[in-house]
Every structure is written in structure tokens, then in C-alpha cells.
Image 1: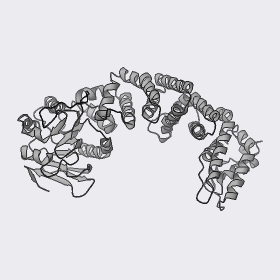
Image 2: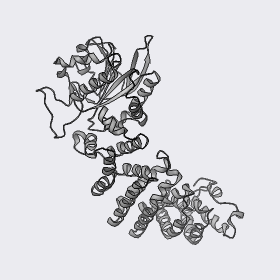
Image 3: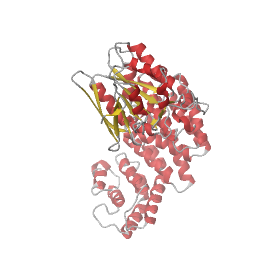
Length: 509
């Protein structure tokens, strides 16, 4: 604890009444371990630990004094996770942690009695202190008692003011608490925890917050069997209520790996449920009309704007063709750059229509849908393509049977390939674009000499193609309008010297 912290934690004498505040203050001061400016040594740490150990009774009594509960819980939580600096025996740190856990375990009943929903910060502090006992406790009895405590008070914790907004930092500890329970509990405790979460989801007051907890927890370090049970009993049911198919979504998130990476659920499900809580039916619409299943690659603002502006025929716009395939999860990392581009476009009076594509057929549908919905007088002003690339192709998706659908020996249905440009059908794309609409390929290596971007630029005349000649993606896109209100794109990549712009088959930058 920092210098002066002890005095700030202890109320004035008149507040404490008959409580022996002098003894309490003396014991609490030991938790500073020399934070008052004294030199910390093995001996001083030993002396502080002995002083704390000797004050067990007064610490327990302090948890019955409303004005002292927070200072005591803070001190115990710090002791449970204490780490001393260089020069202090590591064994003393372990001893401090064990003592902290012992004191919390001995006083679980008092901590339980101190809980007050009207004091959300205290409630949160108590939950964190007991969670630390679960994670650091030395004995099975300590850990199991902590789990029982947390299960009893978890749902009420979701009702506190600090849990009202799922974006509040304080609230984020609840997924971590659930993770600790499900990872360490006995089978009957795990069953009780899942039942508690089910009930919390069913109750309107805690519905959204409980869904957020399960969504963020379901892909973490929990046993696979428990993950499946959570998905079957809570996630799948909730998605079915929204007319959504978890298996279909999970395939889109997993792609060609065939395995759902841990972060996929956590990046997609919380946003999915948040979208539905504010705009009923939005996710079904985004899937049906735009093919979007990887919600976590975009911000909520972007997706809500796409949903609300989807029938605006007057808004000038461009399209983002977002490949469904993402074998490494790297596309999730582009959300910041994409959000920056979206906000610039919006400020300039342009919309961004996002289509998730797993095949060339999906790309064709995207152009046809845009033409039908927005009309021949409001053509596409620019095209962005996001995906994993090579010099000759951009991978879009992966067939559910695990094999590629070959069109011929050189290309497949699930990719944009140089060989595609030999067909006459590809020339129709220009019909859907304004005469000078640029095309931006945000895919590795597509900008190398004689690569996909250069080849496309020779086929689609008088149209700029932007791409990278390196194995990296876009860092920043600066967008502005010229005197004729046409968009100009200045693109900077993660590495210098790899930006390429082609026009009519020639590099012009």
C-alpha cells in the first residue's frame, strides 16, 4: 500500500464508537510493509506478518463495522496477492499470500454478512477478495468454500449498479469469476453454477448481463465438456430464440481450421447479444441481407448504421467485401483501422455497405443486391476487399465438406484468383461501379509485380487498384474528397515501401 493509504482508509474515532480503533489501526498499518517510507527488509516483512497474524480477531470484528469493511477487504485482497520487491525472500511473499487466504477463509461468514446491494463497490470488492481465495487458496476446503460463496452471490452481483452497463471496467470481473468457478469446481458445483447462470439469463433484470458473462467465458480455459454444456443449455437456446443457428455461425468463425479458436466465441457472441438487446432482429437481417456472421470484426456502431441505413437509396456508398475465411484470426485485428475508415467516410457523407463473402457467388450476389436495392443512378463509389492473400489470390471461405469446389485446374469457388480474370463474366463488375471507383485489396502480397492487383488493373481499365507487396495489412487509410466530390484514398501499411497503386496494368506510385 502507498504512503498515507492507511490513514485514508480508517474513519475518524467518533464514527467507530466503542470499537477499538487504535488496535485496528495498528494492525491495518502492518499491511503497508514499509510503505510509509521505511526500508523494507526480510526482518520488517516478518515483523509485519506476525503483527497481522496477531490481529486476526480485530480484523474479523472489523468486518462487522460498516465503516471499516472496505478498508479491511482491500487490505486482505492485497495480502492475498502480495509480491515483494528484489532483496526480499520469495518465501515471505508466499507466506503473505497464504496468510491472506487464511484470514479470508476464516471470515467468510462476516464477509457474507457485510454484502449490501446498495453498496456495489463493496459487493464487487468482496467478490474479488473471495475469488482470489479460490485462485490462491492452499487447501481444497478453502477453494470449495470460496466457490460456494461465489455461486450464492453471483447473480445478485449482476444486479448491482456497477453491473448495469456491460462496458464498465468493474463489470468485466464477472466473466473472470465465472471462469474460475467453472475451471476449479467439483462437478456438483459446476452444475450449480451452470444452473445459476441459466436462471440469471431467464430473469429480465439480469438477462443481458448474464449472457455477456457466458459469452465471454465460454471460450476460455474451461473443460471442453463444460463448454459444450454451456453452449447447449444457454448459448444455443438463446440463439434459437433469435432465429440463429449456432453451428452455422461457429463454422463461419472456425473456417478451414475446423476448430473454433478460443477467442471466436468471445469476440462474436457478446456483440451479437448486445446488438439484439438494442435492435431486435438485427443479426438475422445482417446475415440474410449482407451475409455477415463474423460480427466481432466490426464495431457495434458500424453494424447498427449498416442496418439502419440499408434502405437509404440516396446515400452515396462503397462496399467492403469481407472474406469469411480467417485461419489465423488476424482479420479481427483490423477493426481499428476499419472503424477509422468508416468514421471518415461517414463524416464525408458516404456509407459503407459490408458484405461477408465465402465464395465468388457471394461476391456476385453482393453486386447484384446493391444494384437492385440502390439503383443504377447510385452505383458503388469504391470497393474494399479484406482477406488473407498470396500474390495470385485472396481466400474467401471454405466449403463445409472440407474440400475445395474446383472451377477448373487453376481456381476454386472460394477464392478470387488471377485465373478468374480470363472469364468474360468478371468484366461485368464494372457495370456496378462508378467510372473511377478505386479498388483496395487489403490482403497480403496481392500488390507484388505481376500479382493479383496488377493483373486486375490491366483488365479493369481506368480504375486504380491499391494493394500491398508485403506480408502485412493496412495501418491507416486517409480519405478525402476532391473538387468534384470524388473520394481519394491515401493508404499507409504496417511497413514502409510496400504500398502499390496500379492503373491500366502499370504501377503509378
